[in-house]
Image (cartoon, rainbow, N blue to C red; front, side, top):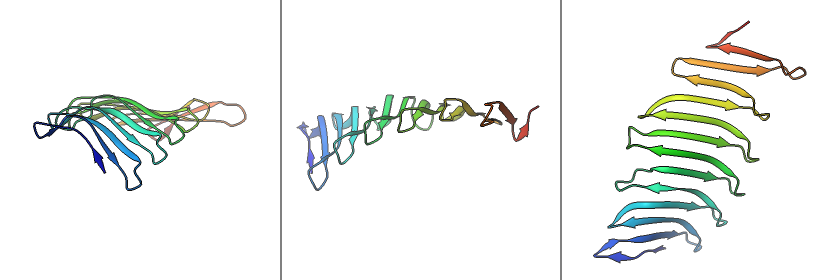
Length: 153
């Protein structure tokens, strides 16, 4: 089921889509028949699953967020540009709210990523052509480093 308003034969305002049980699946803003503004998707429970903004033509732009079904933030990002030359900055979180990774792209190209362990320590950093891995001794916490697969002394 869909719920929307037409103006001069085109969708204007909120366009809501419901599943067969009548639960809201998505709510998106349209202007003159084109996506132009907020977009929210929902879990069957009614909890927000994702939110962002659409530009005319269908590209996502600006801040974006994804959530776990329990409401905890799953990812938080910023998107700019037009496909395929999109630039992004995204942080991903575990279900218990810990930062797990950060990823940056620019003009459709990978720039940088970093991952973290449960204690918030960096476990890897990656740039084009360069991967740095870190691991920690369990008892002492001493950090070891490997660059492109070669352990550093």
